[in-house]
Every structure is written in C-alpha cells, then in structure tokens.
Image (tube, rainbow, N blue to C red):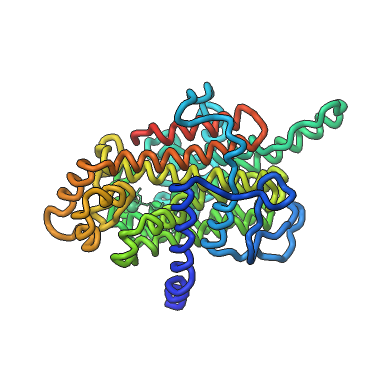
Length: 435
Ligand code: FPP
Ligand code: MG
C-alpha cells in the first residue's frame, strides 16, 4: 500500500514529466549539447550516475528515478555520429541472429539448469518457454542484442602486442564473452517472468501461439513460476559478481513494475497523453533493453558514466521504444496467426496506444472512446475504423522510425565491427517485422 502511494505521489508524476522529454525528442529532434569535456555526455543537474569504475564494487548506490534516467538519456544527442540512415540506406549485409547463434542456442539449456527446483510443477512451468527445440522461444531479441552489444563494446586488441599479451587478451575476452552470455540469459529470464505475470494480469489465454502458463497450469502456478524465474535470475545476477551490473539490472525490475502500474491505474487524462504512453512504453519494454545493454558495456570493462556505457544504454532505450511502438502498430494490422496472440487486444484492455493517440488528432470522436476505455459494445470496432481512416498508423510508423534511427546513431558512436552492423541490422528488422 505504501509502495503504491509513493509511486503514485512521486514516481508516477515524475515519470509523466519525463515523457515530455521523450515526446520533445520525437517532435523536434534531440537537442542535447555537449557541455562537458567528453564527446557527448552532458551531465544534468541533480543526482547523476556515479563514476564507479568496473572494478570498484563500492557502496555508493546510484538511486535514480525513471524521471532522472530518461532525462539523462534525452539530454544526450548522438546524431552527430550518424553513419547510417535507417530510412535511406540498405540494411548491413549481416545476420544478427546468425552472428549470435552459438550463444543463443545454448541459452535454453543454461536457463533450464538455473530453474531446476525441488518441485516438479514449478520447474516445468518455469521452464515452459525454455524447452529445447520448442516453438515457444519467441525471437530471443534481448539475448541477441545483449550478446552483440557485449561484443561491440569489447576493447580492441592492442596493436603490436606480443604473442603472450595477445594470448592473455584472448583469454580475458573469452571470460568476458561468457559473462555476456550469462547476462543475456538473465535478461531473458526476467523478460519471461514478466510475460508470465503479465498474462495473469491481462487474463490472456495465449502466448507465442500456445496456451499461456496460467491456462496450462493454474494462476497460482504462474505467479509462483514467474517469482521463481525472477529469484533464480537474481541469484545468477549476484553470481556475476559485479555490483554496478546488479544495480543497473535491479533498476529494470522496478521500471517493469512501474510500467505495469501506469498501465493498470491510468486516469482518463493520462490515457489521452502521448507522453504518458511513451513513458509507460519505456518502463514496460525499453528499460530492460536499456539497462541490459548498459550492463553488457560494464561487463566489457567500461565505467558507468563512460561514453560507451551511455551509448549502449541509449541504444537499448531507443531500440526498445521503436520495438514497442511497432508492437502497438501490429496490434492493428497483424492477425492472430502472425502475432501468436489475438489482434486488437490493446483496446480490448482499455489501452490507448500510438495509433489511437495520433488518430485522435484527426478524428476527435476517438477521445470519448479512449476516456471510457473502449468499454461499450462496438467501441473497439468503431475506434479501429476511425484509426484506419486517419494517418494514425503512418504517424506511428514515423515515431518508430525516429527511435530506430536514434538507436542506429548510438551504435555509430561505437567502433565499426560486424556486431555493430548486426545491431544496426536489427533496427531495420524492428521496423519491418510482422510478428
Ligand atoms: C507485456 O506487455 C508486458 C511487459 C513487457 C511487462 C510486464 C511487467 C510486469 C507484469 C511486472 C512484473 C515484472 C516482473 C519482472 C515479474 P503487453 O501486455 O502490452 O504485451 P503482450 O501483448 O505481449 O501481452
Ligand atoms: Mg499482455
């Protein structure tokens, strides 16, 4: 109860304000100025990230709110690094999924080992999305970006190093890569736990073309298996032994819950706000990608406030927003066959997403439907027709393209490499996906 009150009084309102920054970026383009001696990092007023070095497992805990995190990200502009246009250039000729095939193929087995418990039903429900060779794996986008970001941020071998030094560096790189792989599995465990719980909250029958865990087992089993996945992910995180990574990933857990609360408790005014929608989308989807990409850079040896760590977090932030905005577009245009879940679900749950909010600019009749959460018979269909008769879907695609380009710009600030190209390729994939 106290948590709910605190969130309502502080984080939810500040989170709402942070959406203004995200929206402004969309409307005017990011305008962050480099005022420090660094290439692009502008430290805002107030609490800022501590300059904890990766080796320093110091006691300082950077306790930041969504508002602070998102404002800091919005203050940083990486447009000057642009090396690729997501709208005009062909996608790089690399396959991000092939580049990470080995790492991702061993993930199922690794997670199944992590979630082996004493109780058979609990183990089975926690392993539901990790059974080898099953079709319930999803796209594994998060493990792919974590592994690619890990490699893209790995320090390059020193030129002219002798054989011994090179051998030692290769060994260190292999150890770091193994940690990236563990982080990728942890990220997917957290994501899966949130989906298992989300399906309970949304009363969803299906997930990834099969029955949702709470339908297959029971609501109690689903709640506990999500908890269990989260518990084992936390243990695995602690085992990584790097305080700064634990801290960043812990923030993603809070953001996920905050996003769900924002979705469940919105006022009519908030449901009409594109800023509120963007903030909620950051919390629900982009935050985990942002914090896990940043954590990959920390594991590669970069300090928390380094340019590389900031660029990694920026990539996850914008990539995640592009991903969620396209997800919301597909809710209008996809079929249950392509999506693995029924379409038009958002409005059925009372949610107003980018297509509706943009559609409302031309079709003011949508406002009343949004305010009453599409709650009267025929509301969902009527709203769908109004959206389709407006430029709502076109503007939604433009919003996603803006964020995909910002994610590409973040990649461009990193040294060129096949992994960087893989991340840029994914920004094309996210815009063209149909499932
Ligand atoms: C899917 O959204 C839901 C999420 C991405 C996050 C859900 C978060 C929680 C339930 C908070 C608890 C968190 C943990 C870590 C246990 P959606 O309903 O819009 O997407 P869908 O259509 O795929 O269901
Ligand atoms: Mg859902």
